[in-house]
Image 1 (tube, one colour):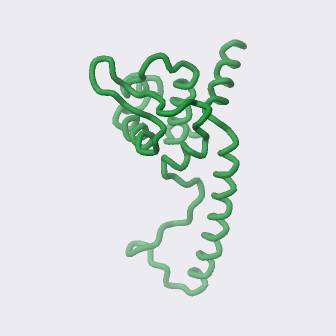
Image 2 (cartoon, one colour):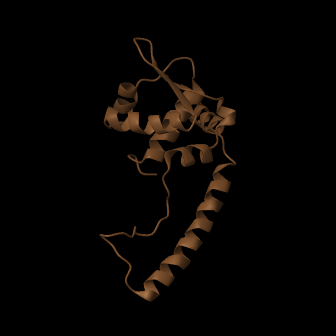
Length: 144
């Protein structure tokens, strides 16, 4: 997974939160650990909050918390909350009009196939919880 992707950041953060939910994480701490900008972290975590996966508290002892138990959050929940798709054709519109009849037909077929692949991906992601990520993290920590 790309280090700077929303999904990579989200899964990493949620895995740590699931492994140790005893204290809140701040955007600044997360950004420093991931060598990225706190604004990017806030955007990603904000999407997770809108998706019902995180809560946040302002103030001196504030930060980000899991909104549900790690056993209740699946990778599909995270993927859907972020609103990203792994597979998508080039967007159409004024800057990229589809003028060829063959291209329009091909685009429709490709989009149908990609929608099916996306649905299969989400079904697979539903099989793994954030709790499993925490277990893998703890197993790896014990081995090192």
